[in-house]
Length: 160
Image (cartoon, rainbow, N blue to C red; front, side, top):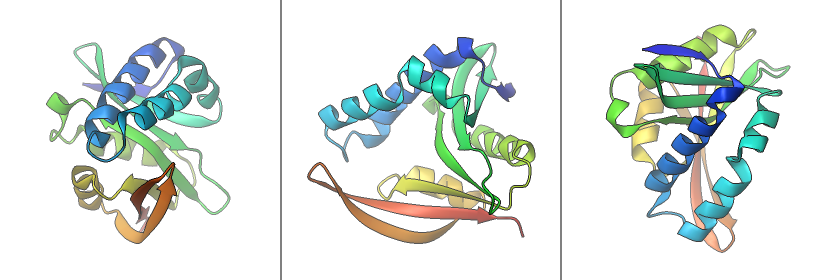
């Protein structure tokens, strides 16, 4: 198992993992057409390549195969970074690999004091994972997106 910074040759696999896992996670929450629009907008190779210049991606490799990734904003002036996305293939979950992705990011994000993440409230597995990694719920926000009412939780981790 290896965690490393993403390189351009990883982009296609990262897009595949995001598309596959996003559809699994949101299948009962967000209509398929809306999911597809989101994935087309966010997880296109050219978009990922652009974001690599302004944010930090780590990939998780097991036996030479990319099995997950995490995407973080750089630390702002207040010392906060945002966890923008994290996906680990289902068969590799519950092995502390997501925790290791978080830990590496905390080590690499110089000056970090806190990290926030926004998660759809129905994603109880993701919320449990984050809470097990010392994230605490700060707020729950109801928002209407293209006629769909979404409940989003904002969680935050802080250096003690």
